[in-house]
Image (cartoon, rainbow, N blue to C red; front, top):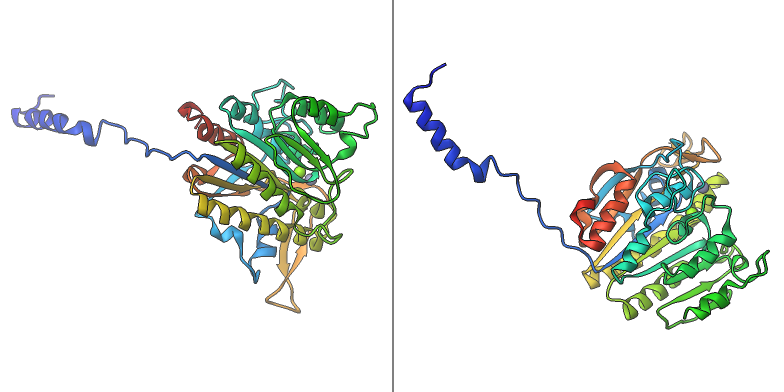
Length: 366
Ligand code: MG
Ligand code: ZN
């Protein structure tokens, strides 16, 4: 094939002009990294739970305040349907784990925890839950054990100091243990303030562990009121006072428990409480402007669907298909600096990668 002089000239001119337009990869837009991250997990909170409770909610729907929405694929290393151990471990180590595992990968190897990485960058770290502090979801952020059932070992893991602040239930795993050890006194020696009380009173300290119940906290119908919101505010106040950067995981633990009971009203009360916490967090983040807020779930619980109610056509009948979890994707809601990374459909492992990037600035993990 021979080319005319004219076409050779044309190609040369095109190549000369091309680089900025064709040959160069478009530069990725620079992501603004947040100073603080508030990571909220509604355990067992799938789209059916959010739809059923929030679509016709008369109050402020926190979920509608998020500009970026994604979907997270929740399978664990050994089961399409994850449990809460593997489901939170993946946020904490970025690798799929076997169901029941806490902070270790599918070969039961300890991988760097998100909170250890955050601490290496001098970030303050915290967990808040309405379960025990040692329950699968919060545990996955600071402990590394093969089974979620090892709650005494999990409590002891707080002595590793990768979690600065914890509020939730579970005093029996700290001070009334089967092995007789007193984890609170160990924590005190490391400079943590410790407190066990059924009511929340102010604390002013960079490091503290506060238990509010022997095991899980009361349900909403038992009168828990706004304890999760108040606990979250107390934690954030101390993180802001004592750390330039911080991350807190806040869990609506019992949305899952209502699902396991196939008790729609239990789930609804817990989700509405969680909605109040999210609204509070968003109000705070809107003023702060340097805080990323993420809301997601580890998995859906109950296989909930909203079926037609023939008697009340504008209502629905909640219908559960299992006492366990289901494998449907769960939504991810994002607000604030870095939120744009959370749009799209991705494996739950990506959430860890995005958070590590936002904390460290290391592009290779994004
Ligand atoms: Mg949980
Ligand atoms: Zn569950």
